Length: 371
Ligand code: HEC
Ligand code: HEC
Image: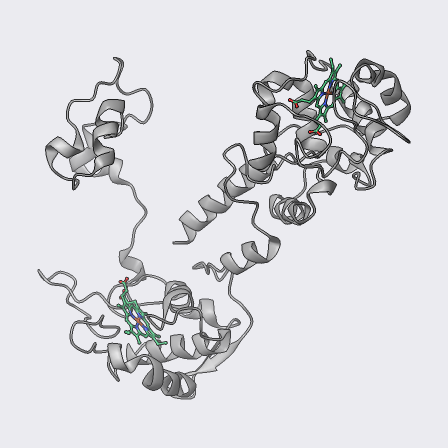
């Protein structure tokens, strides 16, 4: 559970950090660079649209956003899809105008030098009230990824302060950058070494009260499971049977999973309604039901959490399957470029009859590669 969450967070980090880093620009040098733009663009007092739109207050402007200028369809569409001009997006546009907004009508080859881009941006910033206060911040050495993520998220709340090239809506006009609060609410995994545990505490007796009210309808007063709802206690010595009873006491390796799972998912149908203290108390009670602790006044807290060991922990071993007889003779499994020839589709899901048919299937069947 925590592994995949971390992987997702890492992926998110990459998305947020993607894009070039920008050096701080020099507005005076930028004024010279702007001569290349001035044939088509005006800035400053009384700036008017020329061949291109005037560029006052361009930071934070939605692409194609001036009412009195006639943009190409491509530029208007990019704006509708969420393109907003920021340090990041203008830089990308100037580096490759046709590549960044295909079919837009700016007949300009682009600026090849990063310095020219940074300098012209610094110059444009002097005509923009929402300009980034300090483009130098973007050139700062890499911070902790999580800190960087939070600041990227903050930037998204005020696109004009940009610096990152996170374009609202992305190329497909979908979604937005998660806010720092959203990331924090999501990042609740608790790991076996205790990482992620919140402050708090609760006793077996507290847990029993909550359990009786909120859990026993499904899991039974003693965790024995009502009807076919999951059993939470007992089952010791059943693991080698044909139908093992896998419970927290008989099977689970780490107590952190109980805390994480209950906090994240229980009570079923009303997830995330328990306080951190409630979850400590309930975890203590589940330990009690499994005879891992025996006193009703036992209190579980952040401090003693990692001292608790579940009975089956030792039976979990590192994955060394290459040494297992079944795999040993097969060697390392191939993970890349395993098939030298081009891949061909040999059978379609619809023909295999594993997916119910729909109108889309006919198109998909023609498009190839979906199975
Ligand atoms: C040959 C004329 C020409 C030159 C030179 C030129 N541009 Fe443009 N620019 C345009 C046109 C035309 C558009 C509108 C594009 C469209 O609607 O597809 C545009 C659009 C833009 C936009 C988008 C503005 C908006 O309101 O969406 C920015 C930013 C921009 N140019 C910056 C620059 C900068 C900075 C330079 C110089 C480094 C420059 N351009 C050079 C013609 C030019
Ligand atoms: C409405 C019925 C219901 C209630 C109420 C409920 N649970 Fe559950 N519980 C479930 C179901 C269903 C699962 C299995 C979910 C799954 O496997 O996706 C489950 C799974 C669990 C598990 C993991 C069991 C295992 O071995 O996989 C624990 C621990 C747990 N619940 C604790 C609690 C606690 C503590 C409460 C009270 C705060 C609670 N549950 C309230 C239905 C309920």
